[in-house]
Image (cartoon, rainbow, N blue to C red):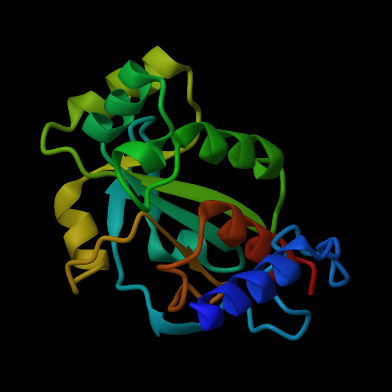
Length: 192
């Protein structure tokens, strides 16, 4: 009993210490990223593809060359579930960020020559993507082709987001990152 009491006093004393405020010495809004942390690493070449987005633009792998490209994979069922509940997408589908953030990022980079956004809707019914985009007034490019997603990500993981570098190579380390961290890293790589 004496040991338990002593342990309790020690833990209480440690917890009572004022916490020093976190710092952002490296300019990152993410406190857990040390200044010398590795960012995006690109290795696997994105397979060749050709597909039209819902606005009619034809996209090819070559259209991704020369730019950093945020690739975002989504599904209208998940997006509508968020809309209906008023919850964040992370509460509905763990690991999937919400589309308003993708739209904000797209609005910020749409005129840039070094960064672009390309999304893929993985609905089996391709008409749902265009209906949802009109309903929400989203304007980022969407390729509605679940078969193409399987081709681009053959390991079956279909990550909610990825990034390609200026040579159309996929980033290989972002599955555990939040969308905010990915967007930060895109900006950091573009600034080099």
